[in-house]
Image 1 (cartoon, helix red, strand yellow):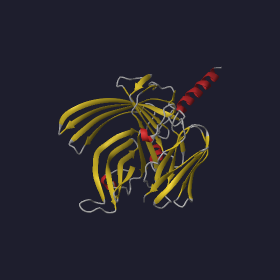
Image 2 (cartoon, rainbow, N blue to C red):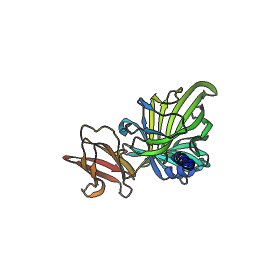
Image 3 (tube, rainbow, N blue to C red):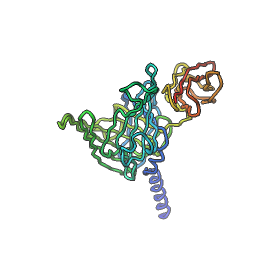
Image 4 (cartoon, rainbow, N blue to C red):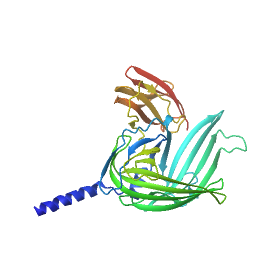
Length: 371
């Protein structure tokens, strides 16, 4: 009987230990490099249970939190790439990763491309931000003094800790970051990380991952021309999954555990270039097809649509002659808001049509590929 007791105790301890996760530099690089990641920001508040500091596993279900439709949310999409060969990479010594976001537009005969490059260094003890650059490109070449290709703004910073590594239950780090802005303001922030919990988390996209619970405290001092201006303090509760999917809640600085009113929250997930995702917990009232975003684009864009009932969905892309160039969806889908990414890397520049057929509903819209 005594041997059986110790055997059961060993199994319980082993099971609890195995439920914990230990995220390293290799995990971070594997989850970010050569991927697209999307961040959805929510400015509305909600009451939510964020658990407590504990060495025992906890369970969280945030599936009822909709990612929302990007037209109504603060959404950012970045491609995470090796820094070698990226715009101004030589200016950021030690960087090995670069997050790139691009927007396009037009004015008269000119096409504009604005690209943001954020440089990072991923090391065994953490991921650090090094700075960034903004690149503006114009075609055809504009008359002087405008440049067809220029850096509109670059900023540099001492290594700023973004994610402590290895990240596991018990990880604690304090880091001081100083950012010198071009308007002669200086931001000095002290950031404390405390990974004090873990467990099973169901994220807003419905995936359940073993995750770390992190309390992130920040104190920020602002100086203008060397003169102190203000002091702010914030507290965030992060849940970071095995693939670095993350959900962050902004809470009161006195919060410690249990249910609380979160002032805002932010969800970041790895993009799926050909995947379809449910975006809402509540079915819409009617069928709809939204304009793709971004548009024009090169080479990736996202098409969103709504289904009020379960439907067999066909979503295809055609050229101006009516010839099919891509099938994006062809299967039965449940009610809700959906999205699918379209990669036009193999298509030439021009105008194309995308058409959604769902039950008796059909609608076509234009999209533009610019290379």
